[in-house]
Structure formats: C-alpha cells, structure tokens
Image (cartoon, rainbow, N blue to C red; front, side, top):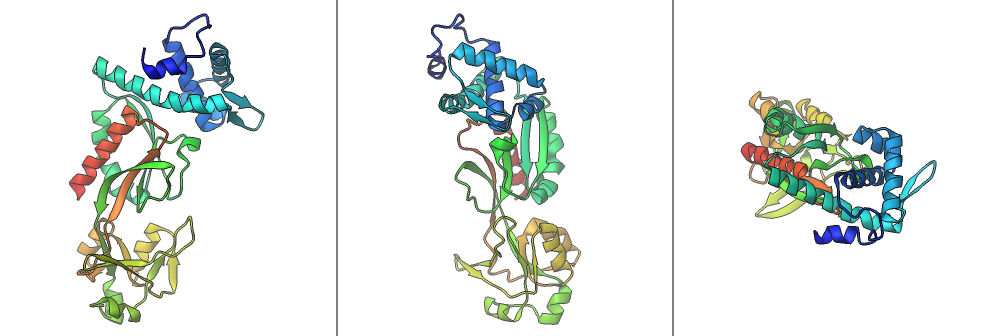
Amino acid sequence: MHLELAFLFNNCQQSKSQEFNVDQVKAMKVFVRIYERSSFTLAADDLNLPRATLTHTLNQFEAWLGTRLLERSTRKVRPTLDGEAYYLRCVQLLAELEEAELAFRGVAPKGRLRVDLHGTLAKHFVIPALPQFMARYPDIELSISEADRYVDLIAEGVDCVLRAGTLSDSALIGKRVANLRQITCASPAYLRKYGEPKSLADLSRHHAVNYVSRTTAKQFPFEFMVDGELREMTIDGELSVFGAEIYAASAIAGLGLIQCPHYRMATQISQGLVQEILIDTPPPPMPVSVLYPHNRHMSPRVRVFVDWLGEIFAKAS
C-alpha cells in the first residue's frame, strides 16, 4: 500500500472494512470540497449532488475513520484539528491517484477545471486559442471567471488563476508563463500639444494618466530601464484611473502618457491612434503567472492547462 495511503487510514484498523475502494475515494472528494467551500450547500452545487447526499457521506466517512473531521453549525463549517491534517493529505493523495489512474489507463485528464483569468490577457491570448485546448482535452469541463482582484482560491472553489504583474501572495505558488514587452505611449494629438519627450528629464513637462491599484488604492509609478537598472518616476497628471480599458482609452483620447503591455496597444499603434515613445528606456517586461494554492498537489487537469498557457504565450512572444 502507498505510504501516504497507509498514513491516512492508520486509525481505521479496527473498522469493519479496511479496503481502499471507490466509495472511500468519493467520500474523500466530498470531504475536501466541503472543507474548501466551508459549506455543504456550495460543495453540493460544485459536485452536482444533493446536499443530503453530502451530509450522509461525510457522516458515514467520519464513523468509518473514527474521528470527526468537520464541526458543523447553522452558519459555518469548520475543520477540526484532525480535519486540518487529513485535508492536506487528501488533496495530495487524490491528485496522485488521478494521475496514476490516467497514466495506467492511457487516457487524457478529465473533470471540471475552474480558472479565473485576467480580463485583457484572456481577451487577447487565452480565449482566441481556447478551441485548441478543448479539442485536445475534450473531457475537461472548463468553468472560467474574470476578476481583476484578489481571489481566495480555496474558499471560492477555484483551481488556478492567471495574473499579470509581480507576485506578492505567499499563500500561492506561481509558475511564470510569459514576460510581455511593455511600452510608454501617447496619442499624436497629445504629442503635438506637449512635444515628444526625448529623455526622462523631459517628463517634468508632461502629464500622465496615472493607474491606481484597486486593492491598495496606491498609484503605480512609471518605470524605465536605464542601462540595465530600474528607475521609477512619478509624473504629474490630472486623471487617475482604476481599469485597464479606461487607462488605454484615456491615452487614445490625448489625456496623457501611459505605460502598458505592447500587445494592448499594438492595433492602436498600427492605426496611428497612439505612438510609442522613449524607446531606448522602456518599462521592464510584465511577468504573467499561473497561481495555485501552495498546499495543493497540482492535479493533471491544472498541469495540462498550465502547460498549454505556456505554449500559447510562447507563440505570442
């Protein structure tokens, strides 16, 4: 027997049945989903099962294990100490079992995959190529959401998220899938009015559309690479924005300088709506990463999706 499996069931030696069968695997999945969602109702919706079935399954499983995994109340479901330890083992074991099953049966990953995507990255890179992924893995059922905010993956039942920018959440594991070129740009009308800056010193006479973080409410500085070193600058401006679409539209309208990934303005540059400036001192590349919880063993579904994201961003670079 697998060492992890032996550990999981070492308290069950006196139970009537000691075989690791399909029903027990199902019970583990039920427990993990209830644990992650902190709700029988939400877990039942995720698993497409009646709530009563989840309650009965968990009660039977706890009796078989000889320990209580979750404390229930009318408002909240909380893990016990045994439940905390058992959950960490379960998520790894379930992923390993799924991977082993798929390898021996020679079949592709299957089941529901819940992902949350950065909106503009999804629009420009992921969604146009998504038919390829779905054709390659027809048994994976995708559930996609879009959020430009912090997502609690476990509480919200999300398997992974695609995000742009520097990673800061230590509770998540990040895998870099791209480094996207960024530019500084402005509209021709703005440049005719204020002149095109030829050096960073010229920026003191210019105006910026300043981008503000939704989570921290802080203004992002402008960034430039000068002789291989990062230099940050604050540029005055009368307009601050919170969204990527408004940010780009503001530059096109001639309201000031912006910095953004090149892909975001490639079409507008070709149409003459905006112009790249300060080419010799560009912003640093923008990292793009897939994030998933650190206490999760990456499932086959997540692994193939992450690998596929790496493929499509590599082609776009």
